[in-house]
Figure (cartoon, chains in turn purple, cyan):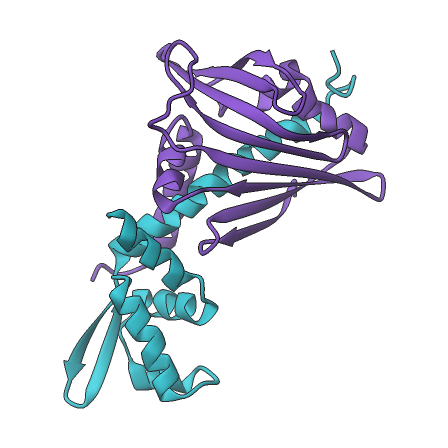
Amino acid sequence: MTVTDVHKDPDALTMAVTVELDATVERAWELWADPRQLERWWGPPGYPATFVDHDLTIGGRANYFMTSPEGEKYHGWWEFLAVDPPRRLEVRDGFADDAGRPNDDMPVGRMVVTLEERDGRTEMVITSHFPTVEAMEQLLAMGQEEGMVLAIGQIEAILADTPAP
Amino acid sequence: MEDERTDRVFRALADSTRRDIVLRTLEAEHSVSALARDYPMSFAAVQKHVAVLEEAGLVTKRRRGREQLVRGDVDTVRRAARLLDALEAVWRGRAERMSEILAEPDGGTP
C-alpha cells in the first residue's frame, strides 16, 4: 500500500495523508522540486498539469494549469511559505483566472508536506488545511474530478446494501 | 447544503460513537434504548449523541409508544462522506502516480 494512513479531522478542517515511497528522502523531494516530475502526478488521469513557473524559494510562486480531455484549462497557483529541502515544504494554493492571475473570489488552502526516512524508504505526510467547509467544498469541486468520481463510486458501494428509507 | 449546516454535519461525525450510530441506523431503525445497551455509557449520554445527529440532519427520530426510534438519513451522510472521501481519493491517486514515477528503471530522473 502506498497510502498507509489517512487522518481526517472534520473539526479542524484538515486531512493528513501518509504515503510510503520506495525511495530516499532526497529522491522523493524531487517529486515536488522538479516541475517536470510534479506535472506527471499532480493532475488526475486525463487532466495533465503544466507548471509554467516553479520558483522553489520562500515567497516564490508556482503557476500551473490542468487541461481537461475537452481542452479546457483550469489554472492554479502556489506560494511557497517554507522550503526546507529535503524535509519540509509548505505552500498556499489557490485558483487563478484564464490569464493565470490569482482569483480572489476563490478560497485559498494550505498544504504542509514533510518527508522522513524510514528504513531506507520515505514517509511523506501531506496535510491539507481548509479555511472553511465552504472552501473545502469549492476546492474539491474544482478540477478534482478524479476524486469526485472515485469517491462517489465508493459511497454508492457502501450505500448499495442500505435499504432506502 | 448551506455552510452552517455542513459545519454541523462534520462536527457531528467527528465522534466515533456518533459515526457508529449513524452506520447502524442507516442499516435499520433502532430504538434509543437498544442503542444505549451497546455502548459503555448512560442512556442519557446516548440520547445526547442522537440529539446532535438529529440536529445535523444525519438521523431522524420518531415515537412508537414509549420508544424513540432512530433512523439514519442517507442523503446527508452521503453528502458529507463524499466531501471527505473526495479529497482522500485525490491523494490516493497522486500517491500511486508518485510511486510509479519512482519505480521507473532510471528512478524517473530525466
